[in-house]
Length: 209
Image (cartoon, rainbow, N blue to C red):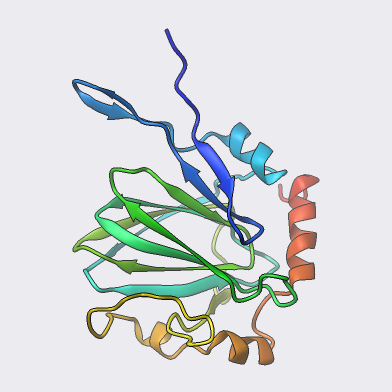
């Protein structure tokens, strides 16, 4: 019996952000793919990626969620996959002092592709729902701690994400009122690149039980 081909893990232009593309095996029943393998992902990251919490969000067409990240510590890395519908998924470097601060990477995610995007601590996440009833799956490396979420404006003109909106996006009041990246950094809300690197080192050394 042949082994299932592993997914391809590629680091993006933002250090700590990875695109995971599965290899599909079709047959007359449909198709099969391996979306996650802890050993392979850990080898790419240089540290383990434990799964401590699993979340889902369901969004109507035109919904814009984010940009969201988490304070460091405690941090909460995320592997995000679209499991129903289609979404424009975006990773944004929000680590103050990072050589790629403010840079974004866009990934089109569709339910049939199985493509996932992993974002290390300090990398923000946002997405635009391109169809109705979009469902996004989040594999999280840590349980959410109330009060640690950081919100940054997804329409921040300095970041300049090309959402190509057809009209006014559907946003939560919290996301619509979120500060720009410059404002969040000036207010001391964003994690530092140094703190995130220290967090990654602690994970590599087994610092998170």
